[in-house]
Image 1: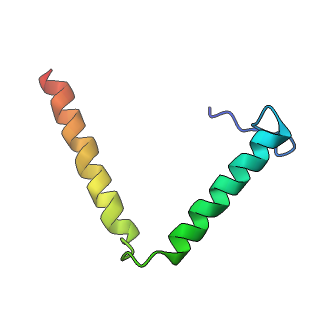
Image 2: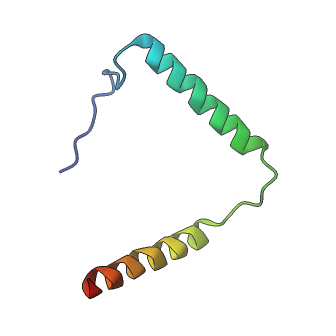
Length: 63
């Protein structure tokens, strides 16, 4: 069963680390929102992921 963090408990050791992560995350989100790259539909990403997983399964069976 997956372990879930308590919403009141930080994953970071210090407040500074939490702030640095928050800044990094906001920059990533803003950059993605401003990007002019075409959006890849979820279905396409999942189809690609399934192919990678199936290839790995085949390679594992052959090893």
